[in-house]
Structure formats: structure tokens, C-alpha cells
Length: 347
Image (tube, rainbow, N blue to C red; front, top):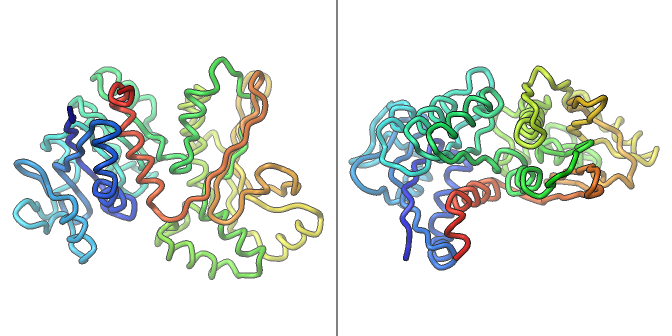
């Protein structure tokens, strides 16, 4: 039997559009392997929302967006200028996919959309980090109270299952230290600068790939990496950490001369997130670090991201991913949707 899952999508940027594409290209796999049929019942972006009776043709919505039109202008079902949270209050859905832009000041619209969905008993899959960074404890409690699922593996390193490894695989471990390159934009820029390109040229290439946003300050100044470190701290390490607990320094002052000097010393400069346990408490930092070339993270180049786990009983483990463009992050959201129906995966 095939189980129909009604999904509503907030955010039709790079990641949201990639998810719509996945609904088409992975439809057969979802049916045959997991017994799932995903049906789009609502979508919202900065122009408004599209929803109503029955399903939305997700492929047609994708064509509509690629033609430069928004959800609010969608034929027959469009509601111009309707805030996303109003769509979430009314839409018939089993799962909300939240992929709106990160807003660290207020968390909106993602935070209220997540609150409303969980309050209605609708499960939530997040690609947007801000709701978790600003209200992790509140949202996990809301999900528990209303028996709704809350998944967010896409918020940290996209398709690399950092949170899944930390929460599921390091059972009975004491994690002594985590080191990670968690932002592909800054890693690409530093790698390109090592090869002779200047900062602005490398940044433009990252924006053209759809990885860096038009305003890349969250990446460049280290805050995107800090967001991910806060989520790891809460979800894996069990710390009620906030951004105030993280010492943050970005790559905005790194020059080609700095990189050349490091290379002459047998080192490479990376933007590294660190959680280090000392005297029973974790310290958190994000900073450019000069790593020896035999350090695992020194091999993380270009668009890659990676993480090193230092554990007491499972040794030191290293994982990395080479992901380009928004598709891997959308794929991580799809992974989370499937995970919400784990009983189906056991077929």
C-alpha cells in the first residue's frame, strides 16, 4: 500500500525549488522503496501563499517560480501578500517543510510557522536554522506536547548526516571535542584564494552556484557556522547553548598573504567550529585556524564540509561531504520526511 503524505512548503528559494524538483525525480523511488506518495497542499514565499482544496501540481508551481512569479500569483490558488504563517494556520498538511531565509534577529517567518505547525500537531522539517538557534528548547517541547515530529538534519552541513551521527551513532560515548568545517561558502573562498583568486571573485562564484546568498555576511563573518555549532550543542551535546556562548570570528580579514604564509609553514587556514569539553563544561568557538596539513580537516577543500568527532570509546572519527548547489540540502529534507515514517522504512 502507498501512504499519502501531505506537505506544505514555506520558502521557494534555491532549496525550496530543489525540493519541488525532488518530488518529481524521486517519486518512483519513494513509492517503490518506502511506500510513500508526497502531495503538495500549500506553498508560501515573499509574494504570498498558494493553497486551497486538494493538491497543488508541484511541477507546475516549479515552472511558475522559474518564470519569475511567486506563490501569491499562482493561478486560482494564489493569495497575494498572505503571510506564510496564515497559510500554515489553515493548510491541510501532515508535514511542514520550512526553508525560508535565516533571520537571526527575530527568527521570522520560520519561527512562528514552526510554532503554529507543531501546535496543530503538524510535523516540521527544517532547513532554516534560525528557529532552532533562537528557540530550540521551546520547539522540542512543543513537538513533544503535541506529538508532532521535528526533524532538522538539513540545518547542519546539508546532506552530511552530522546530527544523525551525533544523536544516533555515538551511543554511550562521551564526546570530548568536535572540530568542524561547517560552511561550504567560506571553505570554497579560502581554497580559491589559496589558488590565486581574490576574495571578491571567489565570493561571486559561490553566489553563482546558489550556495552563497546575495547577502553573504552570515557566511563570511562566521555566524552561519556559529548557528550550526549551537544546533549541535543543543541536539547532540545536550547543552542549552545560544549564540552568546560562542566566540565568533569570520574570514573577512584573511588575505592571500596570510594563506601563502601558512602554506610556507606547512599549514592551511580554515574556518573551524570547535566544541571542547574542559572541566565538565563545553567551550564553543568559531575562528580561522592554521591547521597542519596532516590534520583531517586540512583535506576538506573547495565546496566540501567536514567534521571530526573525538570520543572516549569510539575513537576519533572523521566524515566529509562534497556538495554543490542546493540539491543536497533539499535531499536532506527529503531524508527527514522519510525518517518521520520510519515504520515504512522497515518494509
